Length: 319
Image 1 (cartoon, rainbow, N blue to C red):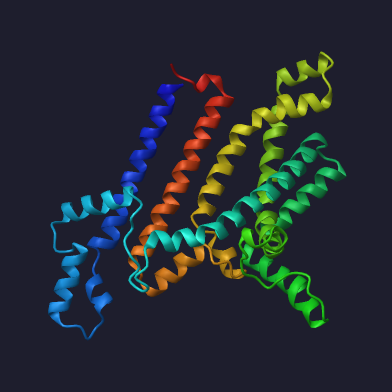
Image 2: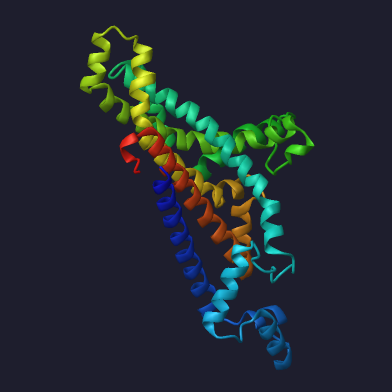
């Protein structure tokens, strides 16, 4: 087990190292003069040279990368070109909105998707199965921004025109300002994101569970008199968790890097919205910080999934 953990940690460290190298080459070696951007077009050459020296851009390329890597390992991504505020402070102020959106939606889509998938697998070919599959097909067919705008129109604009307020138009309220207010502002984003993703989990759960329920050991369990609930949940569903956790880890890691569409539609000032703004203003340090943070989340979620797989499947363990 320890050997497996060490191997996974080594792979994760290697991937993060390669990501940092790619980001460095993309933003530091690519054409463009950050010093000119910071100082402005009217700045003198002396000012440009001073800013270049302060940023360390006059050092050899390998020294620049070592300096960049050392700072990144310490959580120091520099300062925003626009606001001159620490990049980490900017990102840290946006993380709560993204985390709130992601983990609330994950809970809803897991409950919905797994429930519908189990119902479909337990009653294949029946009206329950068809209804669940139609629901999943509708969810998959709607892009998130279309569904989000539709919910805003139906549950915000129309009621507001009739003198009612069911849900806010968007924005994020910190959890510390009140749980109900926090949840009220996130219900529509949660529902939008979870409906689309729950459809994927419904189909994935149904397909995997149908395969498992046809195995010999499942028929043996039924022949021994095990209850259907125990057969499905203890033996059948457990065998599908490897595939489901793989999908879940990828989804969570990707969304934690910035649920860009949802944050834009509902005005949530999260990491995704920050990335869009930073790209538009060519704020390189902020873009670099968001990219590295997103990569870190993806790698960490995949590491966690690997360890879960080892726990679920003893054959994956090495001594």
